[in-house]
Length: 254
Image: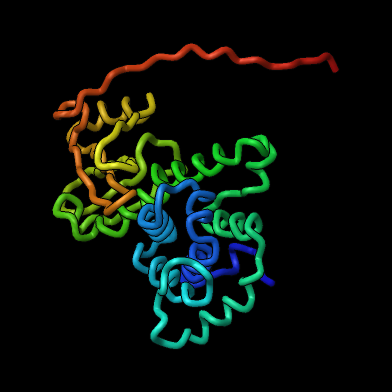
C-alpha cells in the first residue's frame, strides 16, 4: 500500500480525502479540526488546489459503501478507479489515514505528535485546521480567482511566501512599471480579526497603494473575499499589540 504523499496526484488526494470523510464521517471531520463537512470540503479542496465540490463528490461516491447516515450516489455503480482506491485503503486505521490526509498538505503528524502530548490531540487538530485556513487554503483560493479579478487581471503572479519579504505574492505587468504586493489572510467565519507581522506592517507602509490585503472569509460555509488596497490608510483600524516573552535556554561549557 502506497503511503508516500509525493507519489499521489491531485486527483488521488481528492479521492482519498473523500474516502476518509465517508469512512470516518463526523469523527474524521473533528479529527482534522473542522466544525463540519462544509468547512472540511472548503478548506481541504482549496488547500489541494481544487474545488470544494470535488472533495464532496468523492465523499458521496463512497457513502453507499459505509454505514453512515448519508445515501450518497447510491443509484449508480461506483467508478472503477474509485473502487480501486476503496479496496486499497478501506481498512486503513483511523490514525494512519488521518496522518496520510494531513501529509497531503505538508503536515507531518508524527513530528507534531512529538511536541504535543497525546492527551491534547484536539490542540493538534485545531492547529492543523487553522494553519490551512489562514495559510494554504486561503492562498490557493487567491490563486484560483486572481486572473479574473479587475484589480489583478493581466498580472503575472509570483508566490513569495517562502522569501520572507512581508507579503505572499508579487504581481508584475498589468500595464504598470512597479510590482503589486498581496498579503493573503483567511478567516473561518464571515467576520474576525487578522494580524500583520511587524515585517508585513512595515512593507504595507512603504508600498502604500501598491500593497493589497486579500482576506478570504467564511471557510465554514461559503468562502468569499474582500480586498483592501493600502490597508493602513483605509477603513481598517489596526491596533498595536506588544507582548513581552521570557525566553529560556540551557547552556554548558564544552
